Length: 134
Image (cartoon, rainbow, N blue to C red):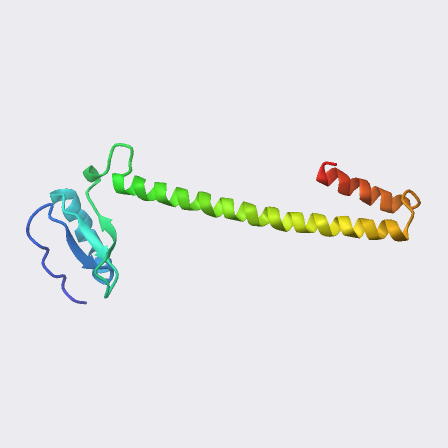
């Protein structure tokens, strides 16, 4: 097992570490954040862009969320609403196609069986009309 590298000097100064190293030094990094207020940015291996951070609890607002977390949550909320609206439109289109197909089936059935002559068909027709709110 390798020995951990020394921590950078300068309390509170953010520094960046790859996820692989954060895994081996998590306890040390949390203690450093707690005691000195240092923020550690976590990057993926071979990618310098930060993906997460270890920050002291005092950096978080009283509501339990940082401003960045609130902004991120608001962005995700907008995206979820867009996806929900798109799925609703897609579902409505598919539902309309099924309703049209069933109307065609009932029309064809009426051509072959006189309406009111078969109790089972009339019961199905009533249930179908009830489902559609007709």
